Length: 160
Image 1 (cartoon, rainbow, N blue to C red):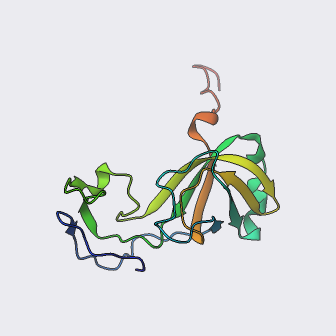
Image 2: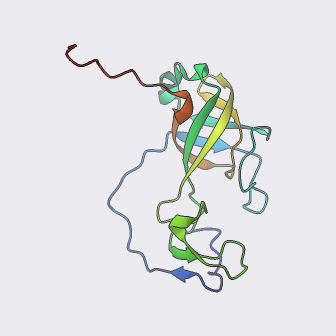
């Protein structure tokens, strides 16, 4: 793993076996202006710089209808994060919390999520504002924002 720093005081590390229980398919790559974690914002801002979700062209038809949403959820694989911390001291101030109590990118399965503003779609590229990941981050999925998506109403009782 690149970008792996030693654990801070009070942090606990576990020895992990290689993962063999899941297979993910990256659908593209994310292009942002940030090349190091030090430059990357901790949380994205909707008025932040434009970023691009560059999809493999085979997935371009899957974008049909996405333009109807103002905000979308982006799921990505934090490929440069360590995966072995069970407790963390995020600010290095000695306060220790469990990994699952934090939004840290350091996780057993480093899946990042951001709700972003959709700026536009150009072919197989989705232009957004509000991301907080490094340039070259693998893209896992794109979904309409949870609050924007209204599923069909359930059928009324007695109506087939």
